[in-house]
Image (cartoon, rainbow, N blue to C red):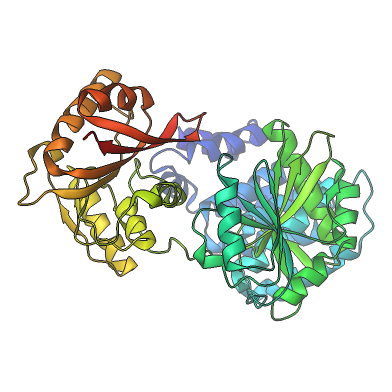
Length: 498
């Protein structure tokens, strides 16, 4: 098909459509190699299409050259870009150039970017010039990279938001109060708002999901790209960035919009907002899809406007950095930390601890971080999980004994004080019946390896099975914590019935 399509292009048949068709055909199998072979020796015929009177033919020809990736196309595409008068085509030339080695032309692209930044946009030109600016920025950043600003605001006062589990904001709030006694805190639906005098406590609190910052003069903005951009640029955002980072502008950002808009409208809004912020800031704030330093997060509120918060990627969250490896069924590290925190009053220092379905070891690692355990064992039938658990545990600087074995075949010379685990749940090929049978086998086996005064801490997606089978196997449910009603996840603390 590729050969036939190219021949039709050469014969001037439906050129515009066939250029698009050829690009599509190249995506299949070894399509690019086949196209290069067909066009070999006839490159000049493709290059001549850049002089077509039809702007869309020029556009599609340039994009095809980019897909082919042959360096010989760079100069013709650049020449066409320089002379192109149709704005809607220019970004396509740049899209093609990205596939070549364009390093020696970087100064030209920077100059062009500066020129575009000075142009007064009109409704007719805004979309296309914005697209050209975005492509130029991407190309320059791709070659030069982003010089990240080191975070230096550890001793600064900030207004922050700690996003937490919606049922347990108070736990995070109490941890913050202990570690930062001067903090002024307030619980709200999604977490904890606070004014803190430093951030030295940050790595010690393991129960928050995300740290966000509020900026003075920017509590909310309208769902209007131009007005929102103006408010963002005129706020204390620059002061916030300057006092928390070394170095000078530009700063690199992305926009995240959380609202009920459909995806296409949301994307259009964020692109427009980003370009407006760039322009109004004099490119002291530069939008990029990678290597960004901070995120401007807009969250639609009940009034239809947006609350505005900042997420810093220069402030790296190291709390769970030990977790180098995961598998699809791995529990979120923050949920493991929350599980441990909820059950901590029942844990004993020096306890012999077993995780019969240990996965990559997260639950045991978090257990030991909260209350120092004695000997710890982790079992899993998946060899890959055990290997990854060993790697994560080494990164955490802990000693845990991992065995690639089915819990139901496990025998040990002594009984355990505690079982802590993320119970298997219906995923992939497992059925509800298989999960129910697994729970029955689990409770039957657990009582054989647990001391009479031992406890079990279960993170479960099947609350009904726990409530039904625990009493039938001599266990009492001492505590039940709802983690997520939507996901059906609970933490249970169980004791042996005396």
